[in-house]
Length: 475
Ligand SMILES: Cc1cc2nc3c(=O)[nH]c(=O)nc-3n(C[C@H](O)[C@H](O)[C@H](O)COP(=O)(O)OP(=O)(O)OC[C@H]3O[C@@H](n4cnc5c(N)ncnc54)[C@H](O)[C@@H]3O)c2cc1C
Image: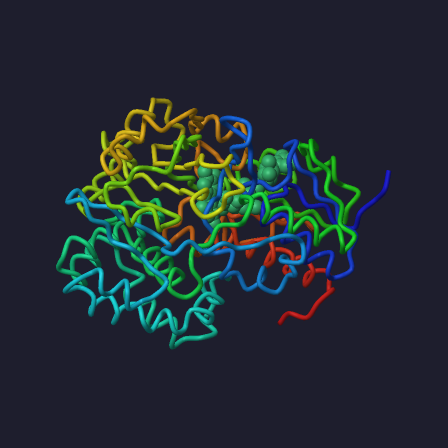
């Protein structure tokens, strides 16, 4: 059997990023993936009907296009093409209108009425400094390289989203927009630093957009894999690693898994205090995900929703805050906050001619067993009456289904663990990427900077491993 200097377990965006960085340093690298298809959270399937291409997990990619690592890779040459919908996001309201988060800051301000000036004051400095800010945000905890950009961000970011929105804005429209963005944190909106997620996603929308890959998110993984193979890296699918002994032939092992799996795979190599700290790691809420094959576009009451790649369905700040905090009490709201993407409106390759796809999820308690189809479709019908009649087929994934599909989605948790202050700084422990076992590292979204398709966890884990072996400077 061929021996590899480094083995990466898991072919998610972080596993592939780690493998690329190791291969670029000249190491021979093997990626071992449990599933039959590589890509982890960036994969597509024909879940519903032939010819309808659905994103299994990630669909919309502001962090991928902001990623300092991905932007240095020749992913376009390996088939990755970004499509920018005219608006990043629509947030419909019960009065039949919708707030639009558009690439143009001015156009977005105009749609916020009296709150437009406050929105501009908040966002303009962040948008102007986005490339610098992204470099510090998509990195391990450290003193910011760009303190001035960071100071403007941190001033609001450390706050909870609910009180931040209430103090910054007077009207329902801007508050609702801010709440929907902050809900991506999967934190209660009354908890710090949920406001940070709203700032990051809004600034990215104006600075780089919220694009979708032509052909689906699987194209991100294919482009990363294509480049890795060009560098000599190998990928083996259907190769689940249950014990570290399976890969003991490699001097370096980087695991694109979460702390619970790390314990199962290599727990016997760790001292008791490290095992205990991994056990204490928290995963937070899960999600319930749905995909539809549709007979036509979603019949939005606010027609401007059809210009956006993503639509937030949750109404007002108060309603979204209620929905998000219920999840943390192990409950679900009858009207959950739903995040929906409609890629086929902008990418015809996703569905047969004249037909469409939709992708949506809502947050639920970790490991939740109950039914959510009525609640999710009810929220879509609320803002798009007649939606159900367009559905040709639907596909559901409960938290258990998600975890069965990808062991990293523990109890349906999609970001590798809670993103509160503690787990942003100590993710998953004070050691971040490294472990007490020589040559063994963690490189998944359970390390900094956390969830999302950006590859930065894998990149920094690989750099750490290379530095420990004296293969690169500590720059
Ligand atoms: C439904 C859903 C929607 C999302 N939407 C978005 C979005 O729109 N935009 C965005 O940026 N992010 C989104 N995310 C988050 C994003 O997908 C993840 O943050 C990202 O994929 C994390 O990358 P990763 O490499 O750390 O882990 P993953 O992508 O989860 O990859 C881990 C890989 O390791 C493999 N593996 C696990 N255990 C083993 C083992 N023992 N042996 C071998 N292989 C193993 C898994 O099969 C998997 O392929 C979404 C996630 C989900 C679930």
